[in-house]
Length: 255
Ligand code: G
Ligand code: G
Ligand code: MN
Ligand code: NA
Image (tube, rainbow, N blue to C red):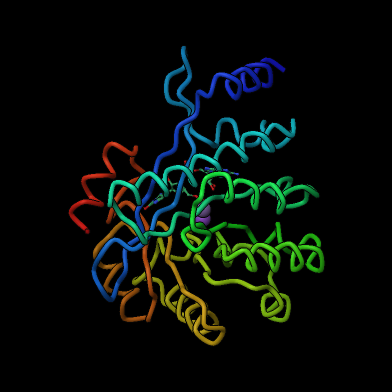
């Protein structure tokens, strides 16, 4: 209850900030996209990580206004980078919660934010998890199709940790799959995990999807992923999530 009140106040006071984690393209060896990750700049507690407040926001439905703030902030940021000639063309991924996707107003809200900010939809990506889309596959497919029609890219996050059947996956209009970091952790030493990654890459390729590896921390993992045919990687090896001020020099260098 305490946290809920605090969170409600923080949404009003706009105490949140976006960090950005770059993605790296294995073929061009360049930065090729970003994931937006929310942080709470708390007046007393300092920087609070999402694991410490997203679940409360979900339980209290505050994720609806908070999630809307994230989408609007990313859209504004994309436009601001374009106007500064910084990083025009790097897509920014936004994590969604189940409650957002299940709310009736979601797609309309997204459409309104795109219009209001003038952000090009092709520079926006939504990340959803398997459990989110499989709870109600029929309905999810409809929501995802509407989003995709707007021109937004769609990614399946933490892939491999859920129970997606291939037939369900094929019915969803996805552009990208992100291999969960638990499968990346022990490559190249674990033959079993190498095989799993190889299978996910093959699955993604067969559906013309971009395959991203998450949680890449070592050069050995990177080389292994390149050999396995993965497209992009994301992880501490290339960059941690960083605030805008630290990101912009990287974008400039990349331009
Ligand atoms: O940034 P970090 O790696 O600590 O993120 C921890 C978790 O919080 C991740 O699972 C991430 O998906 C989630 N998360 C980060 N930002 C957001 C957000 O804006 N919305 C939602 N729903 N989840 C987020
Ligand atoms: O669930 P999701 O994939 O959205 O979570 C993103 C989270 O993963 C963020 O909290 C981010 O800080 C974390 N992360 C990003 N790269 C790495 C990495 O290389 N290693 C580890 N352990 N965590 C990472
Ligand atoms: Mn994510
Ligand atoms: Na993930």
